[in-house]
Image 1 (tube, rainbow, N blue to C red):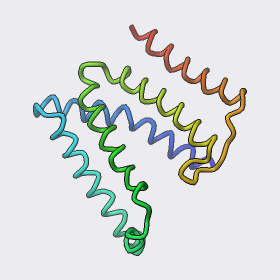
Image 2: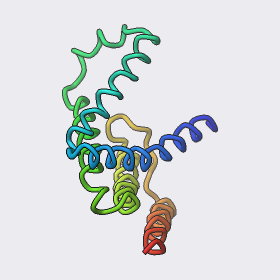
Image 3: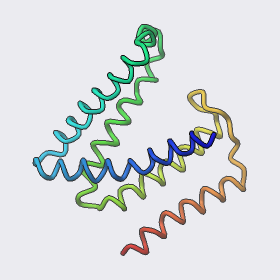
Image 4: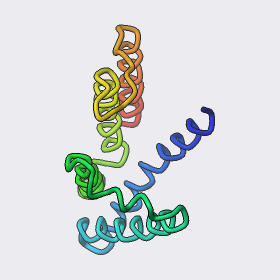
Length: 146
């Protein structure tokens, strides 16, 4: 379990770094959309290498999957495009604050209802309070930065 937490901590560290790097690339080349495209080309190459190293058998099972599962790709595109467009004007910290707030709310709902096959974790008053404290903590970091 500890390694899962460390992997997700590293992923969390990467989100604002991704936002800052891609926002800067978009500003430097004059096109946030082109910067997002380059990000996806690099991400595609990296995931292709991992997939080829782990075996491509899973790709044969794609045609039988429900169409709605592929919407995750649209969500990732929306995130990358929005953070690349918004972060230069709004600030990386502010942009990531609202991303984190959205993640807290949607993660709680997904877990509570077991949506998309997720493990059910009931939203108890104590858990809701913890999420609220986390949200308040993230908000305080942004208020203190002003």
